[in-house]
Length: 295
Image (cartoon, rainbow, N blue to C red):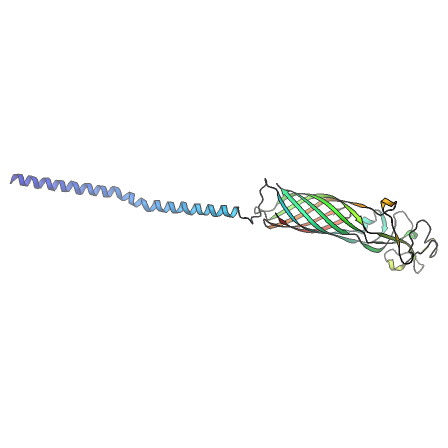
């Protein structure tokens, strides 16, 4: 009986130790189980962060992003329009008479740009037609006024150099400043005819309608219509001034110089740019617009 009681005590002791071991194991495992959801949440956060980075990278590499890599050269092909205002005071540097007029230019433009340096190459057609208008030499007397008419046209090849100053971090807006040079080939005719006041009164160069063209030397009255040149209107056709090549005063080329040129460029997407220009050239002040497609 003593042996049986001893065995019973041993079994109870073994059961107690087993229960104690199981309890300790459960308690030690509980923190690990508690950490598992936290680890899962951290992983989810990492995944979200990675997705956001991927989305940001996709935005930065969007094919329509207007921002430009300073190490890469960009090209745009489009069209340019300019309106040159020729003020009378500039004409009177060389001659007396005339009036403020406009010359418009239009043609294709190629733009190349790298690291904030832009070069614009254009081939433009300009219409220098005007008249009739009254002109005389700067040092001539009023009897030397002639009726001048032009149907001259000019084709210019121009090169503009502009420095780009970005106005925003998105690459959409820029301020540019620089200048340009070029040369134009002249075509067409420059007509001239001596004239005298129709009413015989004082000369009024502001209105060509008040003048009558001379048909020959000695026509009209007084000292008008002299034989100093051949600028007469014969059979309703005025004298055509010869070009420089033939000993006349009509130019065969015209230089172009722009200093300064100030521009504002808008680039809503990578493939499109629009630019507004203002500046001063040898022939007057100009305003312009251009648009180009990137390739």
